[in-house]
Amino acid sequence: QSVLTQPPSVSAAPGQRVTISCSGNSSNIGNNFVSWYLQLPGTAPKLLIYDNNKRPSGIPDRFSGSKSGTSATLGITGLQTGDEADYYCGSWHSSLRAFVFGPGTKVTVL
Amino acid sequence: QVQLQESGPGLVKPSQTLSLTCTVSGGSISSGGYYWSWIRQPAGKGLEWIGRIYTSGSTNYNPSLKSRVTISVDTSKNQFSLKLSSVTAADTAVYYCARTTIFGVVNDFWGQGTLVTVSS
Image: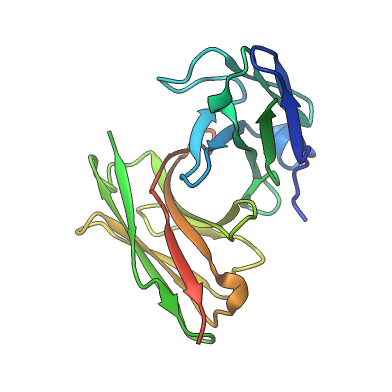
């Protein structure tokens, strides 16, 4: 049972927009930064968003992140077939003194 | 650009100790500013954080694994290592090593992962 909550799956047609929610509490998201990771099938996870809303070099601006209170959201616009993957949120959990990941959300392009 | 590479046995017997090493290239592990982490993923499941170490030797572990985990660092070899004792089939997973920023706690670079199977 993950400390963070994500929807198991989201889907949309090519070119559309999807959002993925990540819900936590004051011990994790509420008082720490959120990062998002993309995992394409059969590959290692890759950093997508850090510090709630920053994109590493090379990540297109179709990907965006936001945080409000104890929840965070990943947005993907202009959905492409290559975006089909699992997406994980993560945050430091202050009271556990541990990093926690969400259970992951599978994005399907219809 | 920093690169990480996991290495170690792909098969471990139940009750034995799983040992993996992560070799860091493209930067010094002791340059400061980063933790060095281990994360695992059972087949078809999500990511599970195992723990992290700073070059000073300071560690943090997942509470659910803490009694069985030891992470150590060898700055002379630019490596850090994972030991997981008393393994069972539930420890079968792909194990990743990663660099983690101190500020923001971001796992910014990952190894490609190595599959460890626990079986007799």
